[in-house]
Amino acid sequence: MKKKTKPEKGEEQVERLPLALGDIAPGKGFTRLSIPAREGRHTGGPFLSPDGSEVWKPLDGRPYPNAGYRVATQEDVVLELMAGTIGFPRNWRVQRAYGRRFLVRRLARVIPETFEVTCVTRAYVLQIEQALRLLNAKYWTIGDLLKVAIDPDTQEPFVFDLSIAHPMGSPTTSPPYKADDSWVFERWASEVVGYSQIVKLRGDARHVVHQIRWVREHGHRHWWVYGSPCCVMDEHWPGAAIPDAIYVPADKQGTGMHSWVVVPAQLSDALVSHYHLVWGWAPILYEAEVYPGGTAL
Image 1 (cartoon, one colour):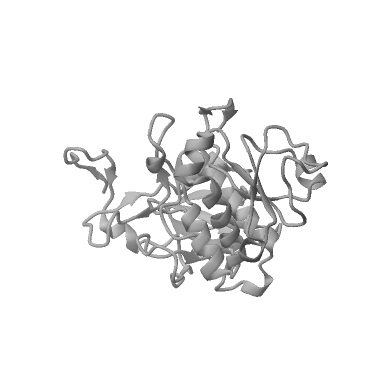
Image 2 (cartoon, rainbow, N blue to C red):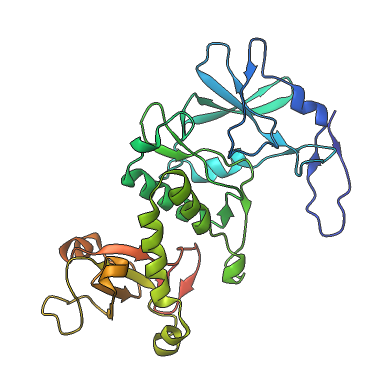
């Protein structure tokens, strides 16, 4: 039986669900799956359908390990918000059974448990990075370590576990309190799938504009950083006709780049391709915000 309790001062009012809900399976013949090492244990674990084709994940869990009640997760809410965008395919449905709500998907291969890390491509990794940036742009964070799976129909990667996802920040909050899962992505890219070179590129590029000297000289206008791995680019280079660009020498041996090209907004794909540039770092494009220079972020 559900009951509502009055929250403590400062707490958001949520519906408290009984602990016994955690013992309810979706039906006869369902088996509880083991919980992957990097997936939250608060839900109690997903169930495999009798025919082995679907995974039913509870949409409720304990808000903290020894909580005396359960609450609804927001996984279906954020999936609906992001449905159809990169990294968030509509490969799920919500099903109610025995008074409990479940997120239902076809059995997918999870990295690294059931999908070999050696099969993870750079394109896959960049897709997931973009997915998290799009999620953060809507002021949502996954709130947990990153889990990625491969869709059985499209063979594309998607963000797999969002059971702790929640809103974070707004257009009026300061940057430290806005959703930013960059560190979550970088930890996954480096420790799980072995793409530490992408993490290093992001760090090297970010360092260019995250210095007091840079802010003093250029303010907060130029934030998009691209690398030139093929040649030295500066204001005197005949082909360097990139509008409003600042060219910064790079340590080729240390960063793999001859120069950094810093601009106030994202460059077109045509310019990036023409000059053989590599995107290094940029701020998250938060919705409903306009930064100096008129760039909507």
